[in-house]
Amino acid sequence: MRFKGKVALVAGGTGGLGRAVSLAFLSERANVVVTYIRAEEFQALEGAAGVGGLRLAGHQVDVTDEAAARKLVDAIVAEHGRLDAMVNTVGGYAGGIKLWDLDTRTFDQMLALNLRSGYALTRAAMGQMLKQKAGAIVNVAAKAALDHAAGASAYAASKAAALAMIDCLAADAKGTGVRVNSILPSIIDTEANRKAMPDADFAKWPKSEDIANVILFLCSDDAKVIHGAAIPVYGES
Ligand SMILES: NC(=O)c1ccc[n+]([C@@H]2O[C@H](COP(=O)([O-])OP(=O)(O)OC[C@H]3O[C@@H](n4cnc5c(N)ncnc54)[C@H](OP(=O)(O)O)[C@@H]3O)[C@@H](O)[C@H]2O)c1
Image 1 (tube, rainbow, N blue to C red):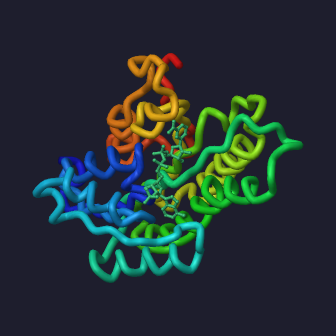
Image 2 (image 1 turned 90 degrees about the vertical axis):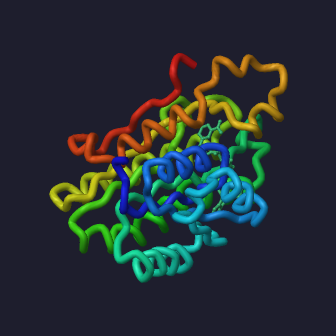
């Protein structure tokens, strides 16, 4: 019960990874606020949360919009008086497209989902966390931030930029009591990936729940000496 009475914002908390993070926080008695786009995804999370759903709230917010991200954090602070953890699991993928075939809309979308989301959310969360002199931020980047494959220029560039931004934020936040880290997944065992790659060996893919455990550890006092790290969570893949 490391998070009893604590308040966690899980942006994208209804998604493949985000859902596991939200449920893990709820199971450790946190108050959890998630963002979502599709209402049916939030309803599904509420259903999975069971009685824990009493400590779950959802906001239909585009977190790539800086003003909306600020409003969201203000609403959380107005209701709970604090924000202990902010996990950004919002992201998107575009691959298998050579740079010269890429359309600019896709490029902009990768930057928005994978970079601007973290920019808007961390700026919004830091205000409150600096006041508290405490807080933990985890931004989900990807192995592709370091490992630059053919066909993934927009995705890899957006994740590499997110990783660099969070590194800089960690340097900015030294001595403030706010800890900031990234995690680097490769392929995750999600419903969407199973549908997209039905012939793959799912047993080799890290489970969302196992990655959620690492994220909760990073948000907990057990990780008080971890700041400015980029943790690989791709097992042996
Ligand atoms: N899945 C993988 O194999 C994999 C591999 C490497 C890295 N990652 C990274 O891990 C993270 C989570 O991936 P995932 O597969 O769990 O993603 P996902 O299933 O697509 O979930 C994304 C979540 O973000 C929400 N969302 C999307 N755009 C949003 C916006 N503008 N504002 C607020 N919420 C928004 C979605 O809401 P709705 O569902 O309502 O649309 C959903 O809850 C991402 O950063 C991704 O890049 C994933």
